Image (tube, rainbow, N blue to C red; front, side, top):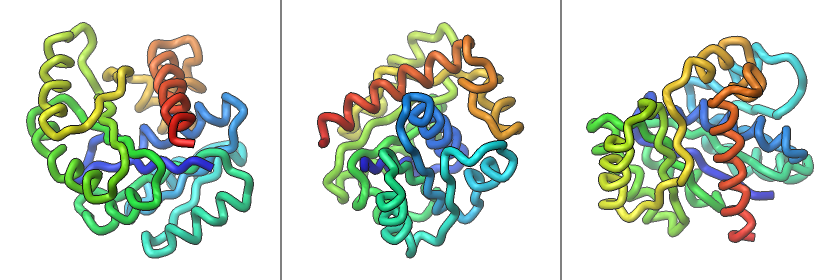
Length: 209
């Protein structure tokens, strides 16, 4: 089982959206996925409550029970566990980073979001793991913004995923009905982005194995 921690010390970065979309993409690719929600807001668990069907598994637990939840996922034959962490809780984020094989950091292109990357970058460095930023909610057709965001991230020694997620209504609409964008509109641009991002993540995890 591979474990991916989805971290950001800034609220509203899109951690839950990223974790849920990657979990469903994994399931659609024939993998067994679990989302472990250690954010007290339990947004991922709330999404699961509104969803029809049993997969992906989503469990909401206190951060102190993270290792037990991962062991349960492993015993349940999960191929991929995604940890949806809490913002503004450095010790919790570090605990998630330390048990992960790989770290994803969703980040919006705004200057305040990019400046906040530093706190998460320090956690990644402390964990000794590899972290990649996923540029999220990007405005369409704005190559200058993408380039500026990549440059800002590079200062912190983090990689940047080659796939960006753009600002698309399908992401928000899908979550309100217990779906993800690739289920809500399988032929849409959002679905294409998610599938591409999952494929890239799978390639990175294969290198970790």
